[in-house]
Length: 111
Image: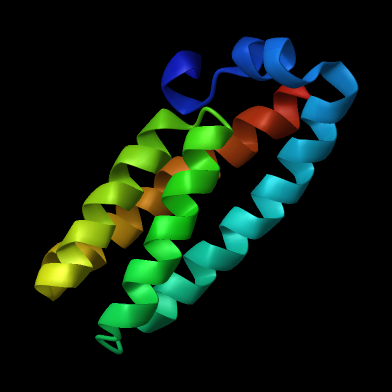
């Protein structure tokens, strides 16, 4: 469901149409970079990097109304602090999948 992915109407109300598109482009690039970093730091069991990147992804996702990605990122941040690595690996997969769904939705919606 679209509202589970991202709330474009809320973003447009907050930032206006032109700024929303620009902010989304920057945020999607940043988010993809953070997810790519997490795919490396989780298998390496680098708790500090995972926690920092998950925290940053959580904030960016929440700001950009990507509720599911924000929630999953928060869970990943907590899991990294307790070093439950299997949970971390599963969460990174879920985050990647949810973020990819947002990317696909935005490609169609903003084309």
